[in-house]
Image (tube, rainbow, N blue to C red; front, side, top):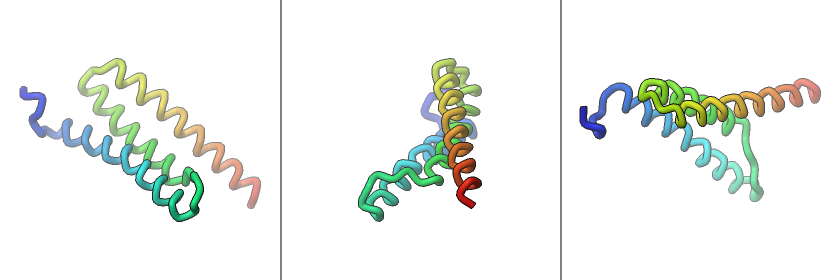
Length: 92
């Protein structure tokens, strides 16, 4: 199989990378609006979504380095959302 062929797995991997990349666009737009560096909650949701899709792709291509990187990232992104949600519950 040609490594440049667009099969379903390649499209899934590209979609995961797109989700993962959009988070930086979101962070940049929000920061520009606020005129300070901000990490919005949507950044973490796109991080998790992109990471999980890329993790599925990494398992498909059997890349241990890619699998480990996306696994650790997913845990960190999830933990950040847990901390944000915990703080929101205390405020309410």
